Amino acid sequence: QVQLVESGGGLVQAGGSLRLSCAASGSILSINAMGWHRQVPGKQRELVALVTRGGNTNYADSVKGRFTISRDNAKNTAYLQMNSLKPEDTAVYYCNAEVVRLWGGSRDYWGQGTQVTVSS
Image (cartoon, rainbow, N blue to C red):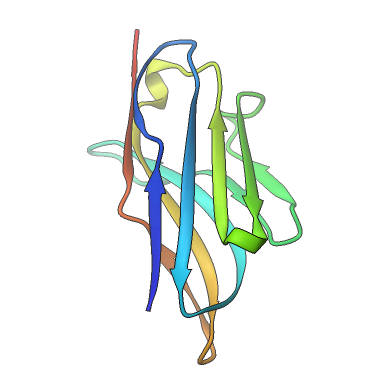
């Protein structure tokens, strides 16, 4: 069993900052890529940022220069530092991880989501 638990969401004014955390636990041998996605009602879930085990990153154009993804492999935890937040960043943010399991094989796991609301 593997669980991803997000934290750090909330309400912030435009221009403010939030830091999201995603902690993975359970029968984990290692974690390949970890990512943050977001979804608003009526729209498809979209990739916000991705970080590989080696630290390579990829960002959606809409967040480049404002968001920073990072990870602590020893803690199986990923972070998303969000600066200069805009109302259009309002969404439920989901953590995703490609987990290599102790008993073999790998698959994607998702967290339960955390709400981020940016007021204008």
